[in-house]
Image (tube, rainbow, N blue to C red; front, side):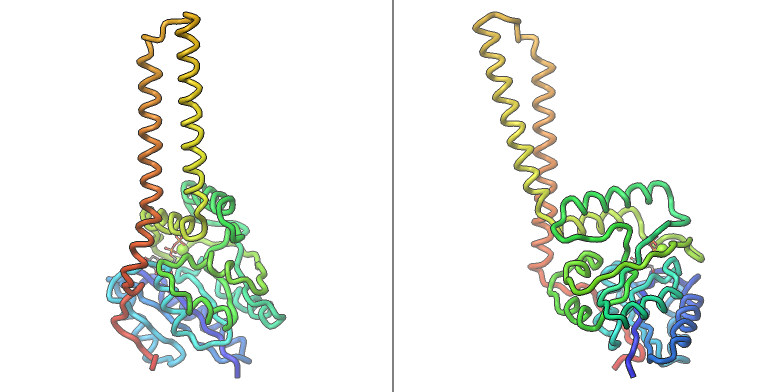
Length: 311
Ligand code: UDP
Ligand code: MG
């Protein structure tokens, strides 16, 4: 009998953990031709999340739990979950039920029809701040422009992937994975499925602004080196501009067009502009160098404290 795996990361999700389990289980029980497993990854929650997961998994052997020693972040939690899946198809889902588990049924149908990756595309997004909607839109636009890999817009990590794709993702040695990018990068037969993204059923977002910036920066630097090339173009433009200013000054001097001693403003503008450009460039380079540094340290992406129902 073929098997379906569902991976759900949880960070401070005591308010939703139980309902998430029940709704997911109901959907999977209904699709009776497959065995299933649900892997909950507790990403260092300090609330009752782990306690609830312990209870669920002691009654239901289809539920497996991985618990981290501290908070390692959403992408690390999903990465760990994927490593322990044993199913023929794997579904990644959020705990807050913004990704409706009921969509799994349709995903499985598309998978049975020969698709390898079925990614859920958000037709609409409920209960999200204007700021988040705007910044998310900008981020996906920029990513699309910069990245050589086509990464679908309005798509999070909610998706189904075939075993062969999961095996490849699991074998990638890179740290700080930007999963939604990697799932596109692998290729194979990909197909979208549209859905309306609902509000969180309870609790607040666990994606702080800092975490969002980290994800965005990681997404861009993992999938493009174009920002470094843009630095070159900007550098070229400013050198060219300074040449033009120089020629203008010489011509002015020779033909006595105007007195440039009153050039304080232009001087300040140039200096601050170039200074700013240089600092920005250094910051951008340091993002890439920092990434190389992180990879060379070879530290694990996460540390597991406890596993339940996993041999
Ligand atoms: N999450 C996690 N670790 C974190 C932050 C979030 O495992 O450090 C989980 C969280 O429990 C949820 C999923 O990632 O299952 C998506 O987070 P959330 O719903 O808070 O993000 P949003 O939907 O607001 O973007
Ligand atoms: Mg959410």
